[in-house]
Image (cartoon, rainbow, N blue to C red; front, side):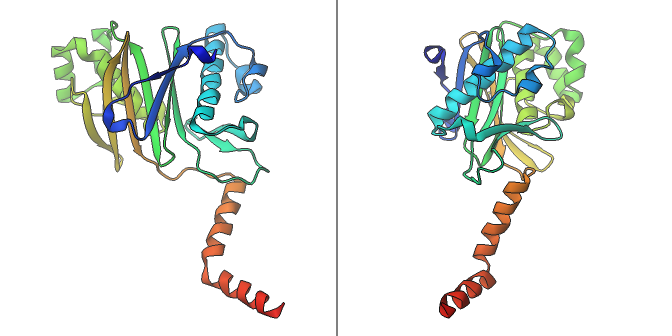
Length: 254
């Protein structure tokens, strides 16, 4: 399947920090996908959702290898209270190397993956560019002036929707962040927006048959595992003056 993986072009302003990949969705067995969780996969009601999820996790594992993370056996995927996923080291590995952020999107038989430098949260969305939202759904995603502009430019609805989806993912809230609270400029390919004290860079473009949207923001603090907390406490203690004094005292007593 490696030959099916394509590295996509991204807007130049993102190219130093983000890579975006794509491949066709495949029928895979859970046991053949190192980053898949069998208990989670068992909850999927349809084979379509199963194939989408496993293809996304396979692509993530493959591209982490391209990023330089070669041992998938020490990794796990965890979710926060909004079910936003991130890659962490398994407990007991005692590793604290920064890992890239990721975002996955499925559309029309393909899976798309964005990997970003660890200092960013990233959000990616892709939808067929020829599609548009039904006009009776416009007021579900927009209000005020934005809604008026959308009604005057209905052909921009998919660009607007993918942009809002990308922002929701970069904010790590999904639909817990109401799309009507995300205010975008209709038709703008590049824009910076402010939400909940976060500055988000949003870029939109067309890739082949897909309308793409990519959003990044400086990473906010995330919940830590017990092991990560202990590693962080140890790191801080090693930098503390009292730790140095203790080490010097012990060294002098030897």
